[in-house]
Image 1 (tube, rainbow, N blue to C red):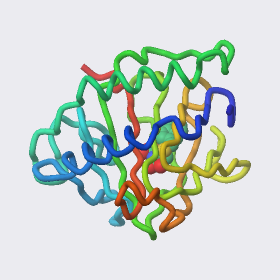
Image 2 (cartoon, rainbow, N blue to C red):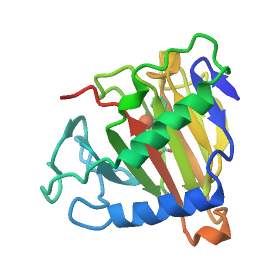
Image 3 (cartoon, rainbow, N blue to C red):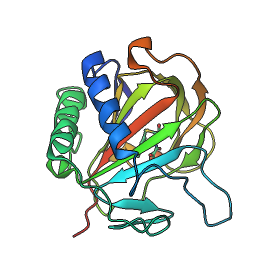
Length: 212
Ligand code: MD3
Ligand code: FE
């Protein structure tokens, strides 16, 4: 359903087999070089969700082709099948659901950011503004459920809407929602489907960098 203009939640979009395939791929991407890493913030803190990037490496605050703030290795490529999955996600989420939503150039997904949350990890309220494209962001969740907090474009604080994201859920954020504040205040530990054999939560976001 539509959480806000341009923000569409499709529960259970990924079947369990698709989730297992994505999880297996994430486990490969997490291996060094250019594997899962702790993100260090400019203020001296660290993010509690750990991250691995495909296509371009995100660091606070920009994109690079190598892991500039880690092992320096070239970033793993964005697979064509994953870009295609993003395209299908936008098509299915928007379909007829969001009249007049601007899908942007969603055929050109060239970045994936994979965040791994253990039971205690969180993500503070922030905006994603390092992409030079207005195309929608696709979010896929695998493993433990979480509370996803969708805010507004003006402030980091209220009003916001809390949505439970479960394993297999899709969300697409485009149009007026693309620059909204959002975060993950809580993980529901131990709620992952047992067939996955995963402790914690994975979130994969697919993005269009707008970079050369
Ligand atoms: C709304 N990830 O990677 S996914 C992020 O669950 C991020 O790991 C969270 O926020 C996670 O930047 C939330 C939902 C999400 C992702 C990107 C967005 C919502 C968004 C970009 C614009 C607006
Ligand atoms: Fe974000």
